Image (cartoon, rainbow, N blue to C red):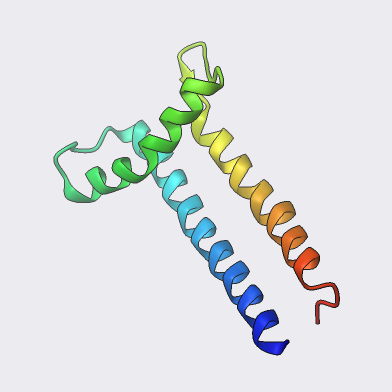
Length: 100
C-alpha cells in the first residue's frame, strides 16, 4: 500500500513540477513577443516550438484575439493554474483517501 501511495505522490509532484516549468516557458514566450528576438536563435526556436502548438490549439477553439492582442498565453496560464490547484490535488485525494 505504501508503494502505491508513494507512486501516486511522485507522479503528482512530477506533473506539478513540469507544469510549473512550462508556465515559466509560457511567460518567457509571451515576453519575447514584446522584444522580437532573432527567429533563427536556437533558444527562441525551441521556446516557440514548445509553446506555439498549445497557443494555436487555443486560438483554433476559443476566440482569444481581441483588438489585435493575443490572449492565448493568458488562457494557457489560467489552465495550468487550474490543473495545479484543482485537478492534481483532487485526483491525489481521490486515489489516496487518507493522504498523509
